[in-house]
Length: 60
Image (cartoon, rainbow, N blue to C red):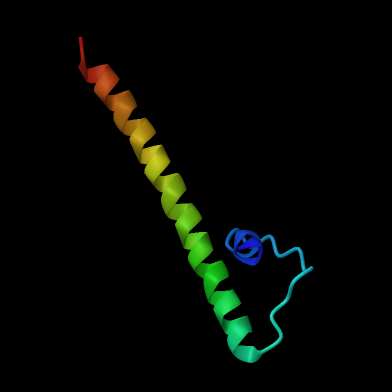
């Protein structure tokens, strides 16, 4: 759990490292998916914020 928590945002403290090639591959994939997750989350939050702002302007 800790390894995933550190790998997803790609902090990579380095205190735990995968030793086998397949584990490294999964760690790389997890870091890439984590970056997409963060990007989608931020885009969704910005979209919700902008949507609320445009609705406020349309109401008299």
